[in-house]
Image (cartoon, rainbow, N blue to C red; front, side, top):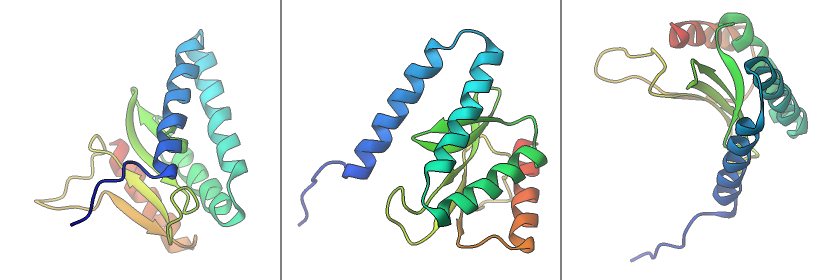
Length: 145
């Protein structure tokens, strides 16, 4: 029988990042200021990532902002994310964040990806190919609906 040992150090750090993000957003004055600072926060977070994650994060950011300009960049638990009318639609999680084997492109329940009785809400990313870029573009356009 295993015993619950609480959140991992990475999970606690992600929650701390989220609390900081919420406090920063609350202090911003105008909607334009909030948008500009949120974009800057996302770009800074991507720039801080280890090279493999940074390369994927930069491409995901470029694809998302081109495919669905209505999505607003923001940080979500310390990772780049994109929202529509304040609701999270998708996010990029570098593999280094939780020491996983691959980076992840994830979608929230507000993403319009419903397809029958079962559909994927996250995708493993190991490299960026033209096929992967096309798939991300299609998913993001559908998700932002």
